[in-house]
Image (cartoon, rainbow, N blue to C red; front, top):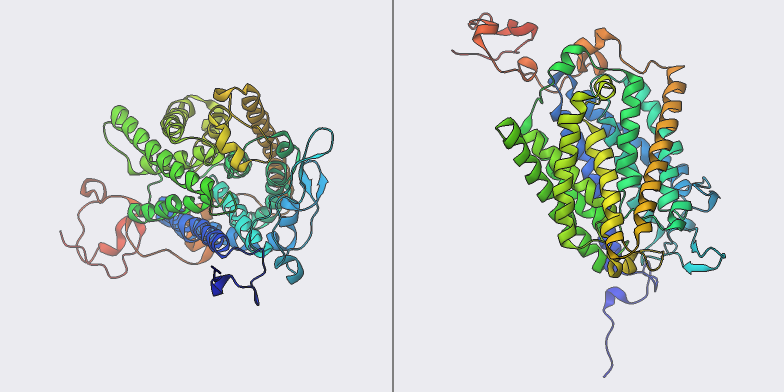
Length: 484
């Protein structure tokens, strides 16, 4: 009996033989939800987790980076990350803008994996959609990385210095990590596993953020001592975009709607939930109450930790990784940080060193232990890959060496970029701007509410009536009537 091919899959205008509409649709949806992690996810989270006077500036740092990275990405940075090899750790720069390039069958990486003798071990992957889909998918990963990095710099970095920093860091740091681990570079060839960016994105943003924070300098002392979020509920909204957006983050990494993609999505949510619960329990045990901000931190560390191995570990391993990601970064943040003079000296506003660098390193190392052979065979270019628990202790060594490279590169390159920018633009805002915040920097304020996140205390602020309400703490209530 003859079968009828559905009209949607009959060849025709815009539907070449190699195009799979299901894979193409999933990849564009995955890319879009990853984009939602940044815009509006981190825009909302950053604008809400800081003091009211920094809400606009913090949100704008994320918004600017998202736009700036896109233009750099399609103009030169995509091919530096995934194009033909220039150096063992860097691709050749070039535009990804012409229709001839964008509508052709996708291929990634363009530098294929070879055996030591030079023969091909695994050909480059050819996802069943056009290059335009792949370029956009990889853009949203590139965009979120400097936005995560910005979390270390909120509340004092000169916005003009940030505008210069983003394209420079993307060009000289992100593209190196992406090519080395994903684009056919030396770590890719060696068989290092970084499923969806535990090293390329999180370890690099955490280390670079901490390094940049060192060079920028600290916030005002009173801001370091007390920096309450201006809107906890909106902060949770941003965190929600981040959590569910991670389904596209890890679920899109296999470049297809396949078995590995399904495993990655499930493992991602298992690890995040476990980590959040462990972090919250530790807060209750040691501080006697659950912290909403702490729960968000635990959620993030779980998402970061599972990222290097989301599609190559089993579900029970995802729970183990969640337990460790909810406890080890908690320990480094709450105990080690407070006892270390160096860590205390550097003002890492949102603790990205712990939530991204520590959690990313932890995830990469645990992937070297738990990577399951069958799952690895479904995804990885290097054949016979598996973790130490399955008989290959060398995989753990590879993961640690790769982490050392990413850490070293980001410390050096980020420092050089900051020192170069400092020659032309001050890295830190002047103190008079730091006292005022958004109004001094942008001439705009997030909203007219009293108190910079402080609770009203009549023993501190005194009794006020309707004639005095606009003088509370030097702020203006703009017509708000306070009745006691």
